[in-house]
Amino acid sequence: MSSSTEAQAPNADIFKWVAVVLLVTVAVVGNNYFSEESLLYRLIAILVLAGLAGFIGLQTVKGKAFSVLAREAKTEIRRVVWPTRQETVQTTLIVLAVVIFMSLVLWGVDSFLGWVVSSVIG
Image (cartoon, rainbow, N blue to C red):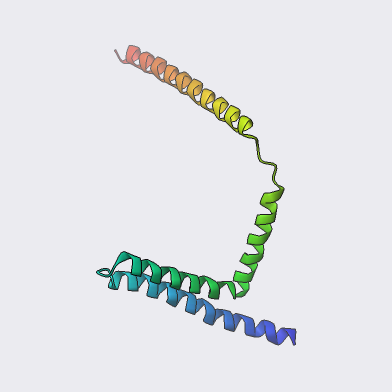
């Protein structure tokens, strides 16, 4: 029974993906076609069509896998130990100091090499 379900899933997914592509196409073409209409109405139509396309897309096998991935990513973000504000500021200042220092070093090397080339060329 599971093999018949797996065999039907790609066919059903194809129709769902076609519906998603059609909805997105209707949103893009409709936005262009109704360009004289109010931006608010066009925005509402685009949001409704995009929401419907997203809902249909999440019903596919890949959409369900994406949904699982998004949930796992959300729980993983909660586990991350984020740096404190002080650590962030200190790291930013160190990076800024290194960038300024390296800029001066590269400017000095460039100026020196330019002087050497000018001396050789005359």
